[in-house]
Length: 164
Image 1 (cartoon, rainbow, N blue to C red):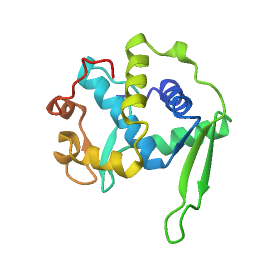
Image 2: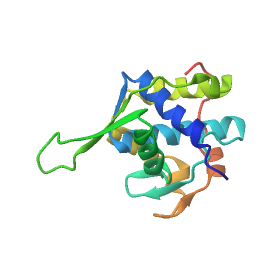
Image 3: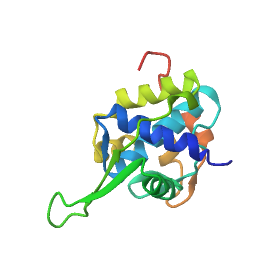
């Protein structure tokens, strides 16, 4: 499986643009991508970003996320800031899209999936998304720090037929 870095970057920009031009928290961004990838695989048996996910303590995490977002920062398409929100807590990574996504890269099915994830999960914070992913078969059926296999998406029973 290869990472489709161009599509991956545009998916991040697309989600960011749909959510008020910023995504607050690496955890939130990671979980939104998880839902894009695993919902898409569950519905179409095809990969979206092509990234691998690991089962980390805070939930599924895309292995290439930090590399991709750093490249985007260098390309000046994404701004990443560490914001100290509360003392004693790790600063929050805030991802702000600097450029609009190139939506011509997406198939109609991919765009529909991005919209679905933005609508269904975009209003939730990282902790709420973490709790949702922890309850799902792909995460709960994988040992900590191991790769989460996409085929586990078929054990989720997600309702993918409605508009959202």
